[in-house]
Image (cartoon, each protein chain N blue to C red):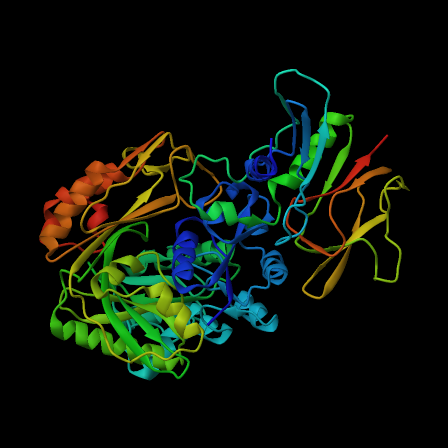
Length: 186
Length: 444
């Protein structure tokens, strides 16, 4: 495999919507991970790890859990626009949730946005975040702020538990039903 | 010109607006409820924001969510389509307060025309012919009885906040008046929270003929001729055409002038439609003004060759109109295809469209947001497509419509295509001899 082949492969993985691809060809082992698109207009950061493996086995291609229903996969007449279509709640972020669900217990509760606006982890840039991964929270504790139309709305937790993951970056736009936090209620 | 327009609507009109924006180089934002995430308007827009759960009140009617969506996408204008918030003066006001241009009427214009009794008074003052009736709201039953005798039966009781046929009662003689008065008020209170009533002389066998107008920010108004929308079932239009088979040159000139007077009387800005009732003697009476783009706008587009959504966006961006009136150069007919079963009283038929093939060819236009394997959500109105044909003569437009309807395949749900096929064969329709009473005697 030469550099051009590897570049083509990386592009292909990005376009396909798969989140993780591992490939072994000849002496080369390639692992490509495509993380969730958190902000509109920010290109995907694809990380590719290439190793020389001392093996003479035939090429093995493994794929990690595939995203569900990417915008490209549809029954509608496909318009080229869909490739450029940037949905705020890109399927990639829901794949995060899915991957975590398959990796860990399905008891985790996903806190989803009930309004639209800008997500902030703290009351102001100087303040620390309301919650961090690993924190124990009680029902009624403030998790974050969603700002819309110059109003800052504190979002309170409906449950008690432990913060497992924060699914959205600070100061990013969020839409209705967008997953925000993963909480272990036990 | 606007940089980015958020379309606060769904279905075929959202797609319609997005298409014109693309041609104009304006970026688009679609908003959608969770039930609409596979909808075409979401796919075609440059950006999309989910704004709520399926119910309209929590999504497409949810003003804070829509404004928030405009904020986070930096949209500088909102196009409300038709229905939903298109004639909601509160929404128009809130857009203005948030620095977003509402591509529609100002709160003052919407309120002025939305209040039917007040609109009528404004029209009378402007010299636009109106239906003889009460001067404003009726105080009590005694006044009601008196006015009815003055105008002469048959009379129509109408809710001032009304729409869609609610709060309306037709009364043929004075014995039935009191019951009608009470039940109309009750119905209106329940539907609109307002039981104000006014009265009008009932025009027998009228035709519903409306005039498309456009006005710019300088208050200059022009008209783009008429559409005949008399084929209605329960006050819902089923098919429209232009020119009206009942129209004459003189009537068009007179009605056009009256429509322009109406627009100028309220300093209108944007596209709008002035609806008239026309009796058998070709007397015309102002009925109401719709301060938005209408469902049936394509028939006008096809005969004057202008993109009305584009013109609407242009005037909203401050571009002035020429002031020229436009007359129909061709003949166009539109059939609204609904997901309803015409054989079973037009019962709604949501569900999965298993097969879809739209008609094509010369003079055929189909505006639709559905496709094969699309699931029609049960939460919204049942219109799934509009078929528009255009030709040099009315006969040819009808033949084209027959051919198009025969080609149109929609399987998996029931549609009103069979109804339209029958309509095109109907003798009275083919003669152009129909009024708003047409559907009363039409049998599937």
